[in-house]
Image (cartoon, rainbow, N blue to C red; front, side, top):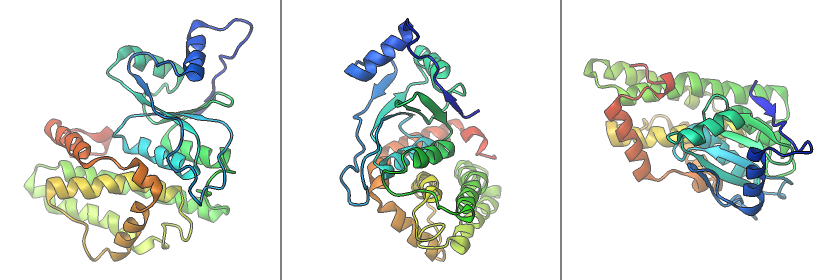
Length: 284
């Protein structure tokens, strides 16, 4: 299951591992080698659309350039939730083993821990729905209140995960000229779905939702990587999609989490050099 509760509570005797974690949380002591705790406040504190801060704090486990983790980062910023950003170094075997044992047995990011009760959750879309419900009194609602609207959000996420992301990474990583036209067409068909079906101004209508949140990091990487490495730009015919992208790119939550261009270039150059599979998204 994607949700479990940390049951290692104080039961008269505190284990050494739990004691270390408590001291680190309370005193700001550094985590074991491979972990970095960032400042524990959302950078959107005080903006007009944030009604109030929610009680409690979230430990946010992430990697700096991961688009899935960026989804949760955006949601935390939108909601104005107090959080500590912890970078996971999977090259450090000690840190990796601790993370898999205590946070996410799948060994992936993002994950969160709600420090109010020890709830641990992983998988970005599940995390983000949890955050929206758990911190309902803070920031804007990121899911519609009706069943049809919620279904629309999840259908947009399904299209992104199953169509747009694979088409992007397959086209980007292709080195066979004979496949180029076919793969570009697949990508443009995936983008045309947005052009034809986005409700406007956001994907499901007037409300900025988790559908927009989930898509933002992938469109950030799509527009940068394809221009840089394929000399490809989104067709001008996709005017509604372009307007949506300009709108969501202007949100403070995205600006606060946007990845630097030089880091994107470095990462994607490495991916191209090693023919990276993107967890199966690259179909070449």
